[in-house]
Length: 132
Image (tube, rainbow, N blue to C red; front, side, top):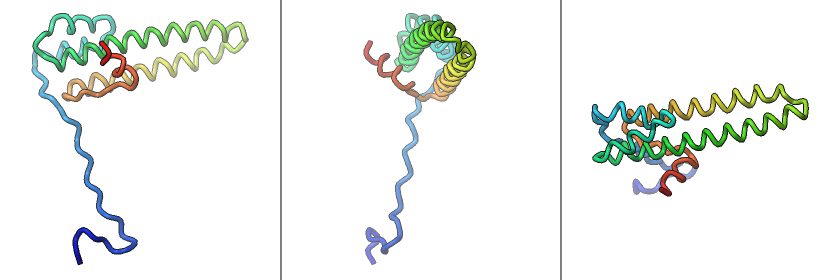
């Protein structure tokens, strides 16, 4: 029997997914990679590091993430103001906790992936960061 043919009812083997490409993280870049996702301080690695496209990419994504998080918090406070007047103030705590936990998890994942040498793209945020 030809190896490219499989008997009826037996699924063909699927190739293993390729591992994401990783880059070498230099020792001098580790602090800058942390700052890249540390709020407003993400501008420091973007302005200081000129020889590492990897650090600059994470800094751009970190600045965009900071801006998106700030925008989400502004929307949250407006929404919570409306909920207060609708006497649904108890939902504000639940939504605030969910928003904080979600942003914190994304931040932790981004920092860990940066230290591992991966360019993990935060959904939507990375697309916006690539525009500039």
